[in-house]
Structures are given as structure tokens and as C-alpha cells.
Length: 170
Image (tube, rainbow, N blue to C red):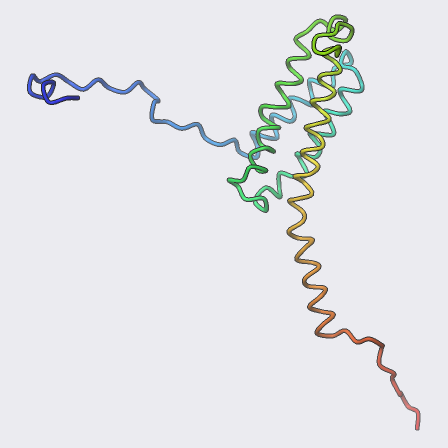
């Protein structure tokens, strides 16, 4: 609002409702619900087994990673990738494929000689490999702590050879 608007008594236009609201981050329950919906979609017998197995690999790895997200740093790119995979990337890939007629999706080349089925398989393999790498990264923190603790114990109590005990021998 400018000087003349104030002087003439014009009101400042109000912001649209909800303009200041920021979408809340998905909760662990939201993520689990999204994974369950994907698992339900691929559970349909019309979905090829190759799609089902790959999608379930991704959902399984995401489920294993969820309790360890804090180890990645809640604002990290890896944590974001896990959440986005569960709530956006995976459901969109599966949904896009399932919206197509099966015979067409599985037999007609659509991109560089690949059918929609082959494109989906490539996408699911990429998501699975990425989720596996992120799961490994989430576990690396605890593995490194275990290694450090083992080294401490070795320095503190370890000996090159076990001591010889002379029990009751004179």
C-alpha cells in the first residue's frame, strides 16, 4: 500500500486465505500410509510380478529406513529423498504405469525403443538402488560407533597374547 492509498483511505487488499500456511511435513504415519497404498496397488494380479517385486523392494527398504531417518539429519537431502520416494516418486511412477492399458503399456515402445513397462522397471530399479544406499548411510553411523568402541576396548584391555594363568601350581 502506497502513500496515496493511505491518504485517500483505501484499504490494503487482504491476502488470500491460507496464503501464509505452509504444508506440514509428512509424518511417519503419512509415509507408512503412502507405502501401504502402493503395496495395495501392486498387489493387484493384473500388475506384472516384475513390477510387484521391485516396488515391494523399494517399500521394504523405505520401511526399514524410517526409524533411522534422524541419523541422516531430518533436513538432509537423503531424509528428504526417503520421504519423497514414499509419498511422491514411487506412487507417481506406479500410478502413471497403471493408468495405461496393460496391453499397450507392455508392448508399445514409447521412449527410445522402451515400453512403459521397461521404463517403469528402470525407474523402480533406480529408486531401489538409491534407497539401499541411503539405508546403508543411515546404518553407517552406528557401525562406525561400534568400530570405535571395539578399538577402545582393544586398547584398554587387549593384549597381544592371553596371559598365562598359574593356578594352583607350585
